[in-house]
Amino acid sequence: MVSSPVPLRTKKTRAVGVPVIDFSQERSKLTELILQACQDLGFFQVENHGISEEIISRVDIEGRDFFAKTACEKQRAGPPTPFGYGCKNIGFNGDKGELEYLLLEANPLSISSRSNSISSHPNTFSGAVNDYIDAVKKVSSEILEMVAEGLWAQDKTIFSKLIQDGSSDSCFRINHYPTVNADDDKIQIGFGEHSDPQILTVLRSNNVAGLQILSGDGLWVPVPPHSDKLCVFVGDAFQALTNGTFTSVRHRAVANSMKPRMSTIYFAAPPLSASISPIPEVVSIENPSLYRAFTWGEFKSTAYSLRLADNRLQLFRK
Ligand code: GA4
Image (tube, rainbow, N blue to C red; front, side, top):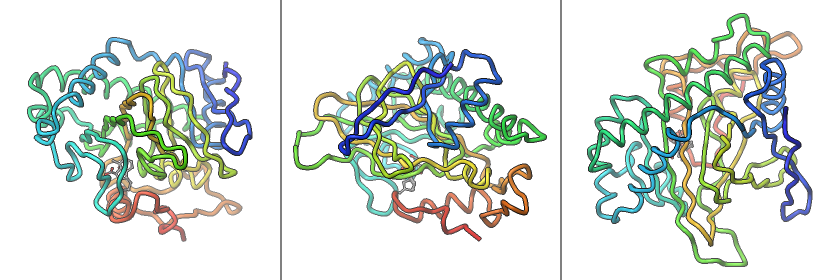
């Protein structure tokens, strides 16, 4: 059952709901609700996701311990080119935000080899991160399989196999937003407005507010911070794979003056060589394919050559 959407008020005083989907409910209903949320907002929260508290708390502890280190110690894991520790600089084209982060390739070998520069207990760090990634990847695959079923795809693994592939280009990020000085006149941006380039993003944060999503009518909607829920975002590649049936959701994180915020984020991506073209079930004479075929590698290089807020998928429209 979907809990009734939490009514929220933005500065424009309009109540907007963020869908919260109970993952423990019956599969056909779950599929329907996920499909609806991907179409309407490109975003939903999941409750009862089944990832154990133990897996979650181990990764939280590793993140907390890392960001508690001195600046000098943290720099040993940087700079993010693109992987490693970064502070304030985002990407390579001048974007900045009030945060520090660890950006890692989501594969066990790469995590293990990096963990020496991140933690004085590298095996504990890599074990915690790899177990978390495994768990969140499983949830992501289930979502992708339900979506494929809901779109009547012949092959229900058509999306999930892209992220399950051993050479998938998925990545993992831990963001830490320290408190900022309160300034009534303007909000301070932790991570600026953007959509994620990948297929699906799964984020979990501590109980500190900051995440906002852009609704279809142009309002920033604050996402209620619940550490026991997962936030799921449709990415640009999913928009292309579904021929625009789903829209990648624009979102941002605003800095909080009261408490530090930490989020752990898994970006589910295909292998670099995978072709991103719409599944046949979403293309017809009435709905011709919107984008020229491209590989994930091609799209990713374009994304990384642009600014955070740019609409990169637009460049691939026919
Ligand atoms: C947004 C989603 C992921 O955090 C990320 C980001 C990446 C980065 O931080 O280096 C990018 C951004 C993200 C999109 C456009 C480019 C690349 C910063 C930037 C300006 C790791 C990703 O894959 O794309």
